[in-house]
Length: 73
Image (cartoon, rainbow, N blue to C red; front, side):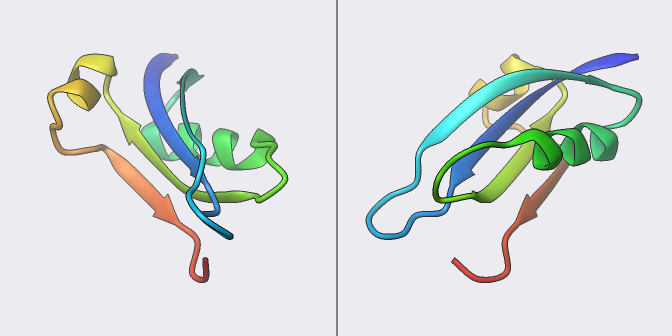
């Protein structure tokens, strides 16, 4: 099991989205992404999620391991 750092943001309608971060334990980055998408709770729904190896990679703006973005905002 690996620990990944995930950045999420709610749908930006009507103004701006609410960003948040969390650590997720999963076998792969794609599994971590699926777990986040499955349990995300926000009135405006999930708009995007980005998985990083760790918080350092996020803060140093390194390339994420995988990401997902909703087709329509």
